[in-house]
Image (cartoon, rainbow, N blue to C red; front, side):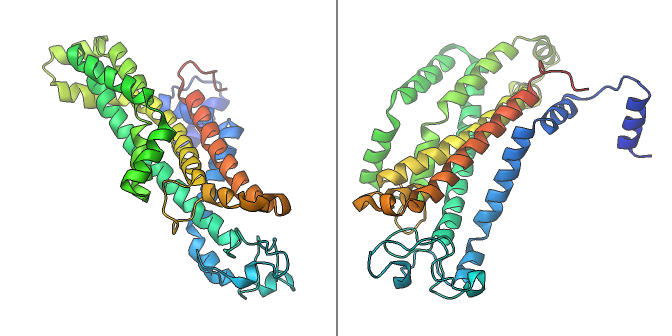
Length: 324
């Protein structure tokens, strides 16, 4: 009999079953349908981003490639959804068929641009979050555990970074150093680490004098062993929650920079730039889909990561409700 079957039998018989914090957290998360729906959306978004080359081959429209058939000859507006698909999807693969229309007045394919834009957002969001969490963990744990002048210096550094105006600094740095994918990632990580760093610092300060840390120190454990074996596991919950929220913030920040025309080079598709391209000449008034498609994806993506973060926070909270 498997462990699951034994657990169900014990549960049926009314016996009290001890569960680990991880099992309790999973049980809470499994009953949070909003968080599960957000997770499903994120998985589908990842698949959509990976399908970019397939969409290129399927539509016959390479990414960032102008197509004269993507612009109306009379109105000079980007063509709308299903333009040129006379026989429905049977005509997909011909250069005259735009399933979701064109994304700008150059005739870029909207479907292809959305897919590669999703890839851009996810890469920036995930890589920037990894760098953010590494910096926050390193500095937050050191400040909280060591204390003294080390804590003072790191805490003041957090205050200084928090005082910088993000958009102004990012725009100035983009003009000075040029636009690139790594520039956007690093600039977002630089302005994001201080908040989770404060959280980790506070958690470590509350844990460093607890009994289990004192016992480990009395047994001769080194500072590095105490940090990695005893303190770090206590930070997994906050780390998971703030990582998911950080991805949402990084995606929104990249879209804002791209909308303003800074950050990413022109050859890298971006949802923010797609929205920006719909503004000149009032294109969005006559072709609202130019803003609706990328804007809806952007809002849903940020919302999904935020809701998933809220669900993880509730699931990992040991004071959460009892799972029956």
